[in-house]
Image (tube, rainbow, N blue to C red; front, side, top):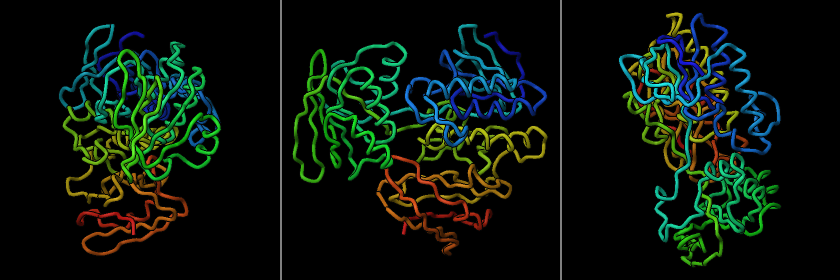
Length: 418
């Protein structure tokens, strides 16, 4: 696509579900250009490579395959008037909201009145998980696997072990099955598989081996190609070798946060993404963050709803009616173990209510009927029980009313499971 002019109303970095949905919502409402910058050759994000059903239920009220979902979001954004530029990587920041862009068309800068960071998240590969052993071929993340199978129609092996049991892990099972590769074991460190029961029940039909919970892969063996893995049962220390020629590391997400860090945004040590308030404003005036950059990792349609939600705050900023950023004195929300993180992390005076009226949390322990408590300045401000479980490996949603009565000028708010 042709390079865009040096000034735009809104620059959106990332052409996945949250970025495309934000573009579709904003383009018809602003006078100047809304520019989406996507580093890959096509827009749509992770769903482009996930050729199975399950996308679009929350945002589009449709039940689509990943590629169909990506095409629909792309068409909607382009049809709304947004400019979609692919193979364009934002490599740096200038003053205020000036972005340096590198693409096959050269290097240029674009200044925007507002910037939305929608750079998403990625799975941790094997080196980040410190799995010992040999370094043979046949070790992938889910994204690498899906690219090889769905984009390049490559055979990947005959017997696979999947590390993880999250939603994306069952997506890997489907991809392996399409490639003619049997899943001989799925290994999870948690006491139960993390994905929803419905996915687990259907997914087990597709497995050719067990789901080994409370276990971990401690070594990979093989010279040219993977030959086997060693799995250790965490409680007993008992080890067993499983013959396989493919290993897929799934889940264990981390935000693609490098651009946010170079912008000097306030970052959350728990999510590793930018700190935001309910309006998805970051600490830098006119810079917003959405999707799995701030909550790694929600479903694609959940991330898309962030893109829809941020539009009103961006519009208010462009009209000069919105605050530039959360006040430095805004009350901070933190989660106590076994809750790992919470977002949004700030209660600001004019932040409003977050997308879908939810706090998003991540837990390291399973609770069937969890009860949450919020405390500020030594006082319990609310306690709520949800009829749905809090489970490792997936987003846990809690009502915003848990913290809505907190004092934005008060002390830190602590959210815990009781």
